[in-house]
Image (cartoon, rainbow, N blue to C red; front, side, top):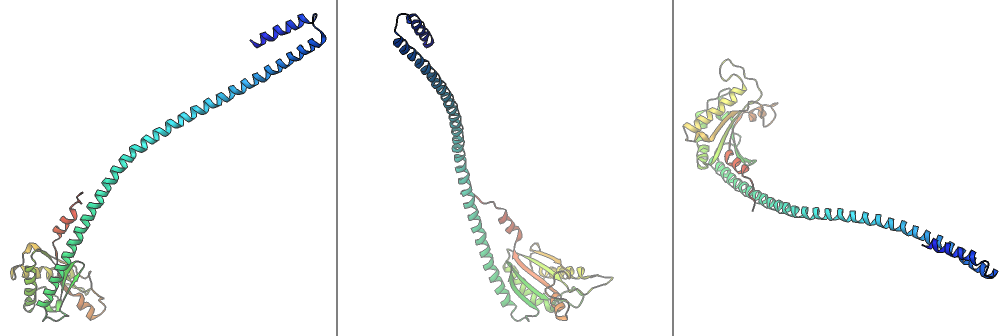
Length: 278
């Protein structure tokens, strides 16, 4: 449009050269040149505006894409927050249930400790007239342990309980029967002096086991301890209390122990109870 106008002006200028003055012609020519210059500047401005518009369009598309991505992330975050709140609630419930379970175990353990202490004191009173070197009673790791020397119980290398020792076993059995919810473990122990015999006991394994079962039979048959509560076994020379390098040490290691403890099956039932959520 503008180019056509310029052409018309040019033709008119040519046509009028014959009828206008030199001064007028120069003015028209100057105006023409200014128009040409202005057209060039406007075209450059238009091109710059097109370039700017293209950049803004691209930037707008990028912002729109980022906005969509942020919206998607926000939606996911809100969804996860809801799930996280649910997980936290479940976790708090599990913690509370575990705390309750721990308190139950502590209460049970405290009760057992009290019972063990009472049982130990009763045994000590019952066995007060027995020499300390022959009988030791103590509470150890949640159980009551009675350690009986072999000198009091057996002849050397033999497993039959001496008649004089049965008085002690009778007093122990009376307490065991009073605490009828407890299990009884009998363990035979020897020193490390080899025992070689063609007959029973053939070695220290045999000797320790036979001494334990011999005592178990007396508790059952003579003093009425329920055999279902009794476990008897031998540990040979492999559970020493002290060194076997001395006579006194070997004498201390030759012992039979009666261990009175809460029933393992009851304890395992307690351990198997899963914490219950509130």
